[in-house]
Length: 277
Image (cartoon, rainbow, N blue to C red; front, side, top):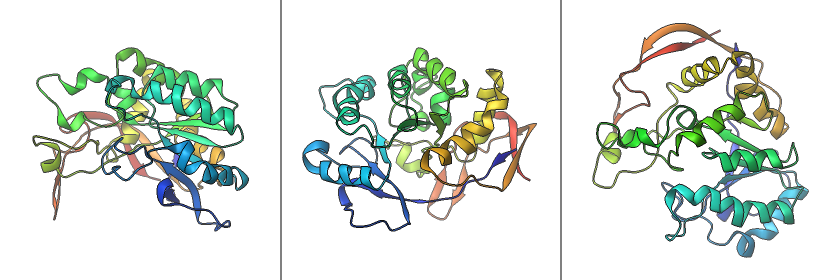
């Protein structure tokens, strides 16, 4: 059994200023401008424009939540995370070693190595179901697969394996973060489809599959329910849900008044099912 989710508020870094502790905000999100869908108003110069805010965040023990990619057009899209670590994150941690940082939805062995090299309790990372299950071949197998397109983009198999090894090791530095994005299929299946995978429907089933295959089901609950709140200094949820080994078919799509959403693993049979406890 694993703890269920409690939603907390996070603010957008560019629109954020700090005056005093509110008790309502638990993190500040850094989107580099243009890094992902709807991030056009993101940060263009972290050190030049936002450093005073980062210093105040240290004083208030408020974590910085990072979409870790550079957006320079001359950087290969598959290298954007690696370059961000070298040019932004490493200098940031060196200048503000007491700043708590969560590197969201990591995709590379470089990110795993960086997180593991930092002082425990100050730098952590979240991992999505898609980056544990899929590599970049999933974007092109049988033709272009728009519902497997997200940012950060899927990477080589060697990177997927490194992330699986990290999260199933029991390390407290890694925890669940779905980055689920329920885009209307018309925005995905078009000439310029948007980035994002809707995985909320299947996330726990896929996490369970990955941990089972790694022989680490005993470490799944900590990854999903303990490591995150412990890093943030929040209480662990007491409510539970149950995962049982029972095949179920993922629907091809979900219909809403605004349109249809195609979930991750649409039409596939998954072996784990999440139930109320």
